[in-house]
Structure formats: C-alpha cells, structure tokens
Length: 174
Image (cartoon, rainbow, N blue to C red; front, side, top):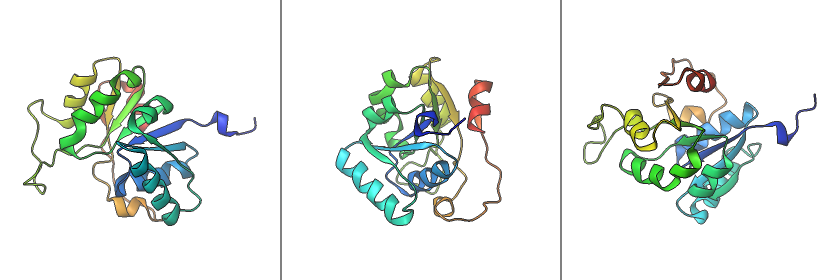
C-alpha cells in the first residue's frame, strides 16, 4: 500500500505556539502524522508555523485558529498554560466529540509557577474530563519532557506517564 497524505492522521496542537507545541510537532511529524498548529488568532498560529519551519524546515504544518484546528484534527493536543485550559477547551468542546484529547497541562498557576497547585478536581486531566464529558477521551501525557529536548534530534531517555479512563485512548497515545 502506498503511504499518501490522505492515509496520515492529523494531530492538531491547540495552543501549539510555544516551545512544547513546536517540539511535539517536530516529533510527531517525523512519526508520520500531519500537523496543525492552533492558536487563539490565525496570525499567532502562522507565526508559530514560521518559527517551526525555521527550527525544523522538514516539518510541514498548517496554521489555524483553535476552533478550526480542533475540527481538522483526528487527535487533539492541548498545550496551553493551566490558567487557559478550561476556556480553551470550552471554545472547542463540540469539535472534540469522539476524539482523543491529549492534555499536557501542568497546574502551575501564577504567582507560584514553580509549584504544582492541584485543582479542586485533583488533576488537570480530571478537570478537562469533567468539562468535556465522556464523549471525549482525555489522556494526560508528556508533562515531564523538556520542550527544548523535543526540538532536538536526540534520544530522550525517560518514562512518560500516560493516564486516562479509556484503555483504547491510552494505548493509542502510547
């Protein structure tokens, strides 16, 4: 079978304009996924794609606003700061039905961004699942990998904790 772009799944990285989104885009593109970088504004998404191209010219990506990226993605990844987690998810909730959401949110909340501040629900992943409901398969992962390492062509030696309440979704993310 010939591998064409039509055969590749699309990963949409919401809030993918930072270092972590860039690193994940590079790694997943190398693994054969099509990449969409989403942001609150198209201009910010386009700037992120231009930055991605400067770092990794062989990594193709499309730029979209978060709502369009959520529709376009087969798998959705959330890489926003904890303070924007719920508002971002609320804005794309209807587009996530039946999809896997990989949430990399770490609840670091200003002014103590060096200290994890667990939300009332117990974890950022549980908070996302509660907001989105059972029609979205929320998996948390990749919180413990340095963004700058993801952007480099190096072997990263670490375990990645993967959690979620649907085995099929966890297996897919792994």
